[in-house]
Length: 392
Ligand SMILES: Cc1ncc(COP(=O)(O)O)c(C=O)c1O
Image (cartoon, rainbow, N blue to C red; front, side, top):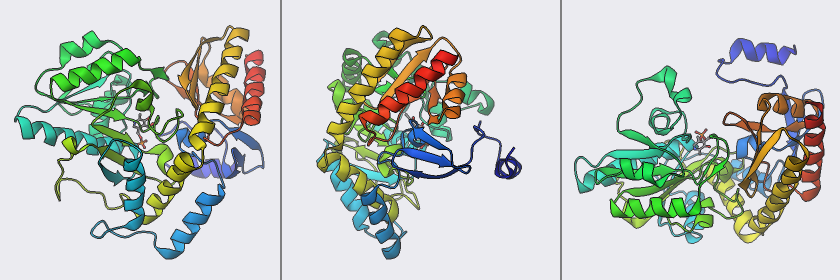
């Protein structure tokens, strides 16, 4: 075992299952470990490194911002934060932004917003409905919203006021929703749950039920958002307009940032209702501005549509060739292959052969590479995956 792994095991809390490699640096869509071994990165920091590594515009903007100002409190107006919000809002139908530092925090903000919205209508309108197999984060509110007992079981009791509907089953939601529901929080593609796309008619019906009961429709786009599926927000593919969306991961391309956007209807926070010391600081929002600019003004969304379709069709061919692959599903550069063999073995073998991928759900291997990946690099991924599947 390498010295660094020994030190890691000695000093870092044992809350992650880590693969036995030590990462040193990265370039383009390739990551290098401390022995110099090169890995094609189809994991992208788990859907984070949108612009890959060493992206010129991003590193230049960040270096300049480091020289200028890294952090200042939200007690003052922050130009980079305002400009990042402007980009998000002018390219959507939302009206206001709140910045924080992670996906869980974005969902915490959304849950508080929902409760306040509900209480402004009726003191008992505080129920939140989320979905079975959803994932919304590890903090207590987000964990309580997450419809998977495996994440909650060691930390019971989770917060009251949540109930969990079956995903893609509108009758299940109908049974739970009523006029005391303040919000439905849902992913349009369940990510951690196993890359399970929502059905368009179902999601439209969810929106209708929310309207009927005056509950906020809140979409968790922490994983699907910011270009991942080929549109700025994944919900755009489903013909719905939520009241609230939560974002993180790709928004900073590796610089920690989260955000919640809402329409005027849901804009109920007043000073002291919610805050975050670091939220939307100049460095993080500089990164967000570069990412958004690449997506919106430099054709990156179109690129994701093209290479995403290519990845999906190449994975489809793999499914035809290998019995171990039972399904291919996803959208854009968020794809999963369902397996009838242990995904962990596939992930480990891929790493051995120089490719980073990540599991999802019980039986899925997920591909969420940097959005700048090329078709040639996808060919490389497919050829490594074939080698791995042949050996297993
Ligand atoms: C849909 C979704 N929501 C929330 C989160 C939590 O984000 P974070 O780890 O940044 O708190 C994740 C993380 O995987 C996610 O996929």
